[in-house]
Image (tube, rainbow, N blue to C red; front, top):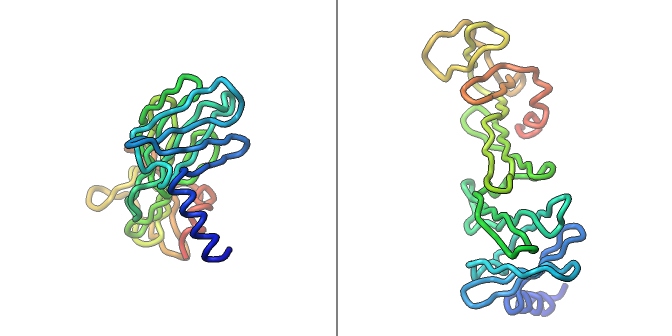
Length: 210
């Protein structure tokens, strides 16, 4: 693409909005004053949506349709800011009823796994975490279940050495399990409970560290 072609493309996007496709579903976006109008382009009888975001077409979004009704689904906006803490707003939308309501946000780095399920990876201290988010019609379920791969430091277990609760400094330890890059420890969290599990469950997390 020549510089001139790129300039024409950018001007076209800023004037007419952008078109975003996902599978067979096509959503067109056009700015309307201080709002943006989204139109579902597959078939007739569907209504347009208006969101109070003048920059929506320019910033971008992803439409994730339901498996049953392809004109309903989730609209995931691109983050307004970049960085480790960047968030993407998520709307539940229906082009049948022309409705849209905000249900929450996702980490901008979250990856889609299957219908309505996203995962996010975070490295903090000597551990790598995988958190799970479930998109529901009325909210985002920030699951309390997560995996942690400890690649540096010690893991304190109690009351036994196989499936104990994780203790972060202080308190009683029945056993201290050392963790390292060469021999990491996999921990499954569920609410306030945590237990050491087989490393095979953290296989994906092991790919994240050098």
